[in-house]
Length: 417
Ligand SMILES: Cc1ncc(COP(=O)(O)O)c(C=O)c1O
Image (tube, rainbow, N blue to C red):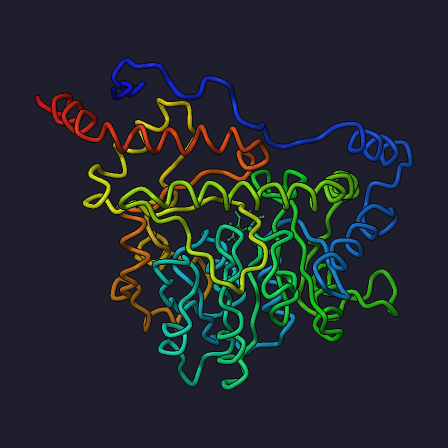
């Protein structure tokens, strides 16, 4: 016999909360108090950020780490450090957070959108190849949801056309591609430590690289254009103060001790859930290529194909939420359809060149389709739980599928005037 949906008055599958985020405890308290009492609260006289930079970079396969105030300026600094010319074209996916593209404009360059692959939700190398022009200078692949992009193909394209590759690894702490850590796969990478991220200090970011010259340029730009051999009031390049503070460094050091274990747990749970729910018609979890040797599951992402599943995404989300499963649709639009791009509301940036740009003509059908009707997101902290938690989620999907007719009927009824 069918169990009635919680949305229609039945008993919810889940009433207990899932793992709360952030996870913290005594180690964070200890480091924070020590920092407070030291009186050394700034990057340049304390020890926490310096220690964190070194540990994080090493864990992510890099010689250099430059901690900054967030994962947006880190992208801009990387672009500026590379010495790319004004109005260079930078290829980005449209299915990502705003910063991947806004950072390009704030570096006085032009974002060019290339579509994602419908199965992996990552940049499609064929679309990247098609977007290359004589003005292209860089690619910013996003390791979306925590699954590394197709770096083998993208690095081959970059090599052929002499392009810089900046990994946007804001979702990918601890992820790996062919057993190499995200953050060491391109020429330079950017991570975020904003509140929702798998490693967090509320706000923060880091640039990682194995390129000594790029690292020196990033370090200078994050510190008002200073250089190691200069004096305090000596500034060599246009830059700013983007240094991360010691309290955030203290929290990050404590959080970093937890990252390896947490990443293993998320990856195990994510794979288990994907295997269970992919048996349902019309449910397509992010496809995992063999090259992805570890997924950090910042998000567990899937596509629902409404005509195969038998219910629309909005109905599925409503029904799952009533069953006690926190889930969301994600981005409402791909970036090229955001008001900022439609209206070229770029403030003082790109004043002349932007007359030539028309983002209303951009068409990236995969990104548009998943935003409009298919994407479903579950957040990373859920995946720090147990296998029983995953079973609750999978059981809720199955319950909604089995009850799709009554779900549709009830929504049709409630939609009547
Ligand atoms: C893919 C991606 N890139 C960049 C960022 C920017 O990071 P931050 O919020 O730290 O500026 C985010 C953050 O949400 C993101 O998801």
